[in-house]
Length: 93
Image (cartoon, rainbow, N blue to C red; front, top):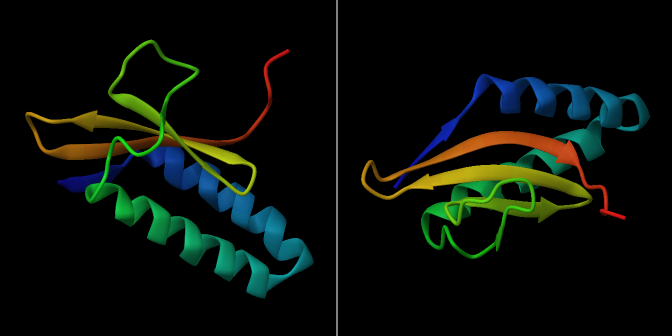
């Protein structure tokens, strides 16, 4: 499978990294490297994470990482995983 990233994800990640870097550039780099590693590992087990709580589609999943939710869509016929976006995790009331 191939991993594709939407521009929305890249933009949101940049904002998060900027905010973390205000406190520590090293922590921002570490966060980015660990997150990208987790995303790249999706090719081995794309259904590892829960079905998205935001979409009613079993092929849209939520990877939860350090308080953030990374939504991604699995497209088996095209053999792609599209990273949709990243948001701060908020529990539903």
